[in-house]
Amino acid sequence: MKLIRSKPLTDGPITSEIAGPRHAWKVLVVDDEADIRTLTRLNLKGFSFDGRELQFLEAASAHEARQLLAKNDDIAVALVDVVMETDDAGLRLVEYIRQELNNPMIRLVIRTGQPGVAPERFVIDNFDIDDYKDKTELTATRLYTTVRSALKAYRDLKTIDLNRIGLSRVLNAAPDLYRISNSSLNTFFEGVLTQIVGLCNLADMSFISTIDGMVATFDGQQVKIMATTGPQADDLRFEEIRKQCADAVSNGRLPEKIRQDGLVIPLSVGAKTVGFVYVEPTRELSSPDIDLLKVMAQQCSSALENLRLHLDLQGAYDNAINMLADIAEFKDKTTGQHIRRIDDYTRMVAIELGIPAVEAELFGKASRLHDVGKIGIPDDILRKRGKLTEAEFEIMKTHVVIGASILSHDPSLAIAREVALSHHERWLGGGYPSGEPSSQVSLLTRIVSVVDVFDALISRRPYKEPWAIEEAAATIEAAAGSQFDPTVVTAFLQLLRRGDFDQVMASVHADNLNLVEHADQLSKMDEPN
Image 1 (tube, helix red, strand yellow):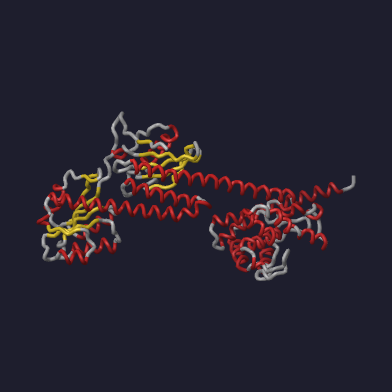
Image 2 (cartoon, one colour; image 1 turned 135 degrees about the horizontal axis):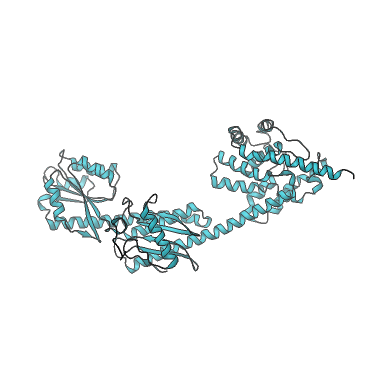
């Protein structure tokens, strides 16, 4: 796996938005003496740790400090005076940071010129601080040492925390990778990316103009962002980086307008490049760090390969469903768009009952095969113009067993098999083929039982005229608790009366007209010459 390093532009100026200085460590200085704040800046002039300079934020009171903390959630170190607007203002500020802001990361150093007001042992024992200094002993050298130690602790804590968060996301997503979906893949990528950010010591997201890291995949000529630690919307630099990275991994050409030392790590499935990871380290990465980055990128590639296989299988499943549904529909031309309407009705009722949209879509697909067994019913019975005899009806009832048999050959069609077998069972029993109460079958099957009868009632058939919608709805409502699951009936009628089914039912009228024309044609064929 080849890592592509970016290089700065050589023909023209580089704007600070594209390739400015590395991110600075934010240091909050809280002291009511302006001279102390100025002296702190002077003593730390030129300070650098891990390749990053300091950015000072100053507050003359605990109140001003709270305002700065509200705007900056990435402050690394706070140097806090004790006595300001009150004798314990600094200590109350410490409590506010740790307890109300719930910020355990910022390193807090108490500085006081009046140690008698806040004795060292008492402050250390009773407040969550990281260091205590008397201003008289805080020389330039000791201040340097104190700040450097605090920054190192902050950096290491952030790295540990990011890796903890990343590992948690990876572990949470891992069980779903074998039944992968976009949501589980995004969670997995976010976890991997969070760990990469921790490893590379990237800056926090609050730097609006900088993309700290992102994982992206290709979909044809389109790049889809799977995870990012930086802003996306209306960010010109983000778009520029994305295009440069895509070009880099597609053509092997070094990107030119990405921050110096940025890394582009291709994601490959077989010999094909399918995406990339882009990161901006704030320090030179060691060989073990780069090796670990490659391992993480490989995990992303494996996840993408799993997704591709999953989508292939899902596509094959969908094609099989559609093929069998089309065969059943071709066999029984008298039902028109009935199968497609059952799909829509079923999905909408499932969602009304609180089923997640993704699962409801699977319900709809499975419902399309409820009458697939009619393939095995003789045409003279299936298309008979008139009421079936008792013997013919017994033959017609066998379509549920035939359908279940057809669908029994593939475990992935198990829920469709149950629907095909049991959608004519009744809530209190007495249906067919088993006569057992339908309360024992799945919710999907109980939904199909309702919508199948309703659509059949409002549709023209060779043996009957279409019913009015109000009449069909009243019949369904009257059968709640005897023939149908009453909970399903309630949800169905709510959707019907809200008008949610109007668009679905629009095809019923066209089907009814087509059936009239078809019947007229058959009548003319039956007339003697």
